Image (cartoon, rainbow, N blue to C red):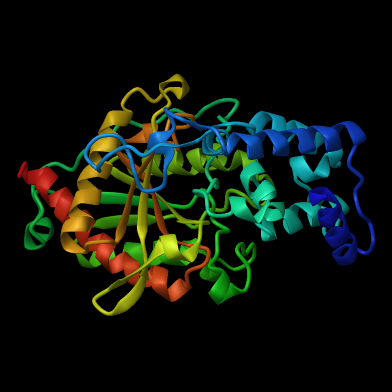
Length: 373
């Protein structure tokens, strides 16, 4: 029934050219949905750190959740891709330069509806699933020939400019966006915008760069696109962007992949000093099998930043989420983080307001690191 609804919509918006789903795949999709729904009634342990806003360690007790949430968080990526590859033509997965082609049209429609992951697809047809933690980061494909990460080379000595801002040495920061098309629906009218970075998270990253520069940091903001033709390869593509930036400026010590989340507005919104703002959420990938043995340094930095945000702006941080199935390209530096600013239900203005507060918290954490306080 879920798929029938999708085919009808595609036919209406794509000149009545719906795409049939193979009978075997239809049965398999129904079976997957049944297993997930039954699993929601079976509480288990071991998935607690995947609950929104909570991580292991210092952020409070680890809650229990259901088998559904565990499967929802960890499973299905490979099977999901296999199902869609067999149901849709190759252009949907390989990307196409042919303007207006059927494969490109379906791919864009799926992205605009937020149906780029198994979680989003099932939640579209089963409303009760829509309140779970966002899944925009569950797929990370490694490059066939992974680029070498340049070593860090810190600036030597203390410049007058750095001293004027209270720095031991000028912090060098890279800001980039693996999912550069993420937008804010109340402002843009849709959750993803492919042709105007000023309506996307890219603008928020640029604003954060401005705020950090005002505090005396050297900031390199990237506007590179990574998802337009192939969503599943986004992290592989953004890794190329990051390593190229580090090669050009090996003194970059802090690397921030800035996103916005895709969960209910109530989870991503708060009021600080009388203004409505998008909340912050920090994600840390801990998969050592992907070549990320020093993820604990990332986690320690995330915890320090979360604590500082809570000290300065109570309620602004949603906490830290550890993902053991990925690394989010955070192996490039000890101080690399994926930072969510607000969600797709926030306005652009709410996300922009958050950047000033985030910049202040970052500056204080970095200064404490430099001087060992």
